[in-house]
Image (cartoon, rainbow, N blue to C red; front, side):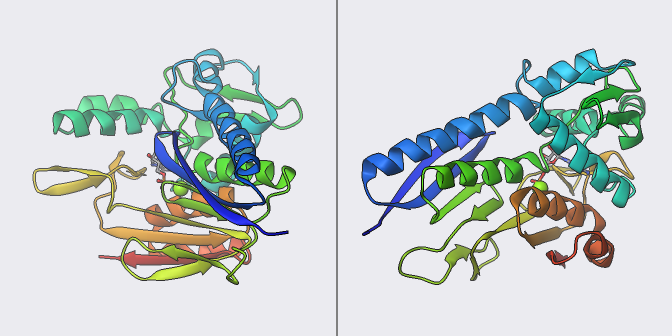
Amino acid sequence: MRLERFEFSQIRMGVDTPIVVYAPSESQAIEACRAAYSRISQLEQQMSDYRVDSELNTLCKEAVGRWRRVSRELFYVLWRAHRLAQQTDGAFDPTVGVLVRLWREARRTERLPDAQTLQEARVRAGYRLMELCPHRRAVRLRAEGMQLDLGGIAKGYACDHALRVLRRYGLTRALIQMGGDIVAGDPPTNAPAWRIALAEGGETTLVRGALSTSGSTEQFVEIGGVRYAHIIDPRTGLGLTQLILARARARDGITADSLATAAAVLGAAGIPRLQRHYKGVQIEVREG
Ligand code: AMP
Ligand code: MG
């Protein structure tokens, strides 16, 4: 069967989300991609910290001091995030939401939070304050005013699911990108692999796997001559100040996305430790 290339782009989870797919006809491509985008929207409704009524934000309000049962998807992503937090001693930490909010405010006002505000936020962050019960698929938070944040892991997971939807429609030659996170299925009809342009120049290839890029070079605010990136350094509670670009290649998007973010915090020195926990994942870090 002759396949043609189709390309779509929509905004999901606050970022451009292009899908490239090979399909026998335009109508089949449209139908499958519509279903894939709608699957991403559904996950966004579960995991977004921007949407007041997302499942995640409802959980933040209702799980303080008591167990709250959550959806299978949300539980899985929280569980993966929590496990990575344990493995990295909190360098990756899905409970940094209040600190992320302070960073967003600093970006808006171009002023850092004062010491007391920062301190008050820091006591409401820390992965040990989030308890998970796999048996009941429930979550409990140990401090008032906590904000969970899956911004470092949910996009990769959403790409994984979008690819699955396309496969269910019989379209296996596909690539999905959400910001710095890319997940690819089978290659284009006329090539052995997808070609991916790199932010720092040059290109790489990807086939049946995931590639995520993270770091301090894209999103940051500059205050007093210092750049604070959108990734929180849990040691200071502020955005990362070192120049760093981290890239992870893995079998699936949830792994690549979360490990790229973790590597951005840990730096090159953290690579062996991440690779010990995640066999077969390739991680590359450029500093300075
Ligand atoms: P990424 O672009 O995938 O590296 O993820 C960055 C996003 O992850 C930020 O915009 C925050 O939503 C969230 N985040 C910030 N700092 C951390 C951290 N230390 N651990 C986990 N997630 C974080
Ligand atoms: Mg990430």
